[in-house]
Length: 401
Ligand SMILES: [Zn+2]
Ligand SMILES: [Zn+2]
Image (cartoon, rainbow, N blue to C red; front, side):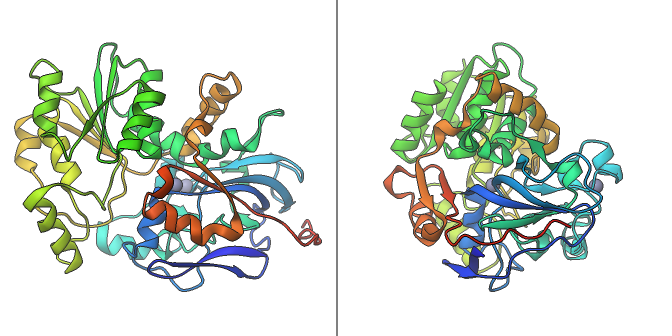
């Protein structure tokens, strides 16, 4: 089959690789109909996530049709159209039982790698380095999906793949970011980063009843999209002092909640930006914190920081004193997709949300390298790229077990 493989920093190629096979009794093989390039794939592309190996298949956002199922699979059958959540969850461990799906104890065979650095581990993720289990990803014609009965969600008849492909990650990720804000009517939520997750977090915050959302970015086309699609007020952090401006906009108090949809490749301004870039380049810090520092500074006393951008290690000059003095609540982490999926599918079916409205680029899987280049340079007003495998040569489907 054809698959998008990582070969090194800013080097991805579409290779011909062996088809996946059923390994465990609870596996299915999904024939991928649509798959996306995620902002967090760019951290792999740029070489910021360790433990990638040459030839690793990328991608954790994919939907498609089941073409083979292991003997223990009971909820699904060949021919079902399914949404596959990006975290892999066993459904049986303490964390899965407590709906902390992305923290599954059993789905990451390489958990020892993270335990060493973090003290404990997250679950496995498709196509996201050996740190997250070394699973082959979904930017491919076919994918092996373990624990199928636990993770998958059937796509209701009549809903096209494009409307639900973002439910694999960024829609639930944006939704959880808003849920973590404990929104009350009348609240103001500020969102750093008007990329795909930021936009969907703003839409979710509105859905959950916030009165105002304020989007922060430096790219005019992204700010425009936040304004048009999410009715957001917008700030360009290269033009204004964000914390000061947010205070002015909220009667001197600051936003009730602040969402970080940026993560470890954050850019700031002036000397602070240079400081982070240099330290990260020299490997003296792994993550750049300029967005996070602004969140802490801007948030109102007693407010919430909801961190959904990816961080991988250690950051410098983190204002712990301000978090303490202002009594801030900090929440974050990978989305517990399984928890939100049934509700979000229903919202799509009822046409209350249409996540596909943020898709800007549709390409063939074969053009993935060009897609990565366009996305990483934010060219052509690129927000979200969907790739379609061609399944060109008619071939026999992998046999059902
Ligand atoms: Zn993603
Ligand atoms: Zn589990």
